[in-house]
Image 1 (cartoon, rainbow, N blue to C red):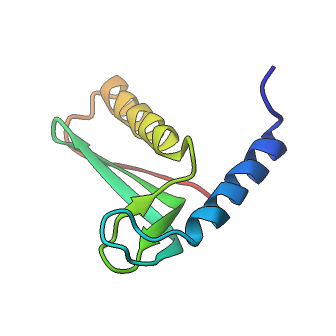
Image 2 (image 1 turned 30 degrees about the vertical axis):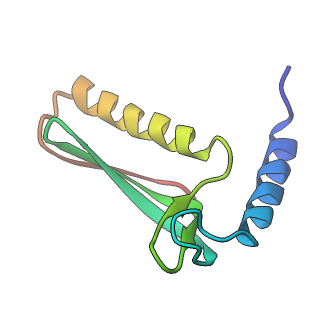
Length: 99
């Protein structure tokens, strides 16, 4: 079986702390912890996921996630798009928040 949830979270937190000391790979700016919102659009439907912990470059705005974080965000967005399809929602916006 995989790592317990608490162990995975501790590992992610450690990796985020290490990344805080590294410069942005795009522009060399400094990275800051932020809680962000990401929006996606597909076939006229927009979905928004907010409350996401990430590192953001203070200079260019490049976003960095903990390992596995980007995939988890994509999975969440895909789940919202699937919900829209099931409910035959062809326009508008769906939102989800992480707390």
